Image 1: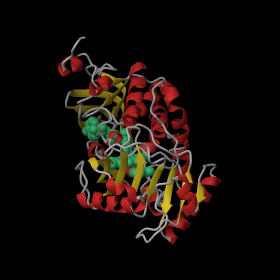
Image 2 (image 1 turned 60 degrees about the vertical axis):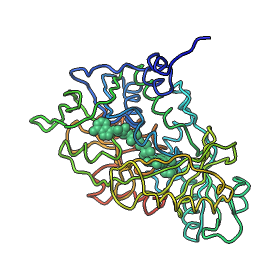
Image 3 (image 1 turned 120 degrees about the horizontal axis):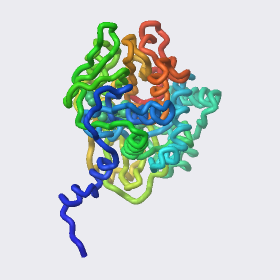
Image 4 (image 1 turned 90 degrees about the vertical axis):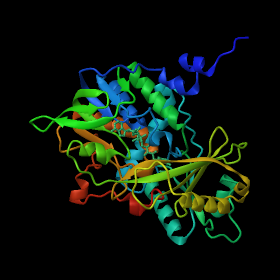
Amino acid sequence: MQHFSLLSLIKAGLTDQSHWQRQWRSPGPKSVYDVVIVGGGAHGLATAYYLAAKHGISNVAVLEKGWLGGGNTGRNTTIIRSNYLFDESARLYEHALKLWENLSASLNYNVMYSPRGVLMLAHNIHDVQVFKRHVHSNRLNGIDNEWLTPEQCKVFCPPLNVGGAMRYPILGGALQRRGGTARHDAVAWGYARGADSRGVDIIENCEVTGIRRGNSGAVEAVETSRGIIHAKKIGIVAAGNTSVVAGMAGLRLPLESFPLQALVSEPVKPIFPCVVMSNTIHAYISQSDKGELVIGAGTDAYTSYSQRGGLHIANHTLDAICELVPMFRRLRMLRNWGGVVDVTPDRSPIVAKTPIPGLYINCGWGTGGFKATPGSGDVFAWTIAKDEPHPINAPFTIERFRDGFLIDEAAAVAVAH
Ligand code: FAD
Ligand code: PYC
């Protein structure tokens, strides 16, 4: 029998970490690209993929300061759903959900999309009214969503505690059966592989440090830790850091950045059949295929670029989850981590051209952009390729904050933060 050292496995590209790194070329930058995408998260990679696959634009570079999917893409709790209140959001997230349904086949890469149902729990009269309003609004938009009584919640998710004296009693829930989860890093890898095979250059460890504009004001190049790279068009998809990168071109954005954290428990046998969200107590639970309970907590109260959240926020979430599912008291937590999300005043994203010729931005997904990945990449690629928005992202402009056409999902509580 042959024995291999870890080093030899890494050199041969056979460890888990190097598995994805060896799948594409990481060439030196070319002198000029048609499009440079700043940010190698799943949104940036999906954008590059659709530019090549749908618009025939493959002279594209994706520049990532770290490793692919190492930002929020690889840090989120992977909840996928399209049960947003307003028509504009419903169209955007439903477009994404439809793409999720065939994504593994389209990419020929298993992203482990699992439509196991997302159940949003109501704990007070306000929740009940808001979620019932969502159910009606979603149905008018052709999106599945249904109201469950506490007893029906218990049938759908048996570990839930629907009786007893609780601080947060379960008064019912809104269930989107087509919602679910996917494997986050596989999404980044699948899009990266698809983009690479169509000729896109993916350049890791390449931080963008400046954006150069010509006399006309149009973008011309990015300055990076690996030198200057010329580009006719630049798309910024740098969640959490968008204001910093856009500021390099002289563009101010209505964004704030907050830490958001998640935790996983030790792995256990399958016990939790669906995704449960509780907006009121800022807790989300699902079980990964490895058996870990994946638990999302709330955002920190203060702005920060730190990729870790306050311990008291995690403690609050665990308190609440142990009330919702008392058997979880016996579990140990394995690890926690944080990401940095950028949020707009109305908690809806900006996916748009900017006033600077050749500069496009995709940001402001806040705590909820993973679910949007395929739809976001698709409509952003359209916007860059045609220099005009796709009808689905047309409302998601920067100008809406000046003109007052907000898409106020913050007030609509489509997500808990
Ligand atoms: P990222 O994956 O963060 O990619 C941006 C990339 O840009 C990063 O890799 C970063 O390194 C790179 N970058 C930044 N600056 C530069 C630079 N100067 N030069 C080069 N590269 C740069 N959403 C959901 O829909 N469902 C959920 O359940 C969910 N849970 C979440 C839980 C947590 C704990 C967190 C943190 C987020 C959660 N989200 C969720 C939100 C979701 O993760 C994000 O909206 C989504 O992943 C954003 O994807 P992205 O590709 O835009 O960003
Ligand atoms: O958008 O569904 C969501 C979500 C859950 C946890 C964080 N975001």
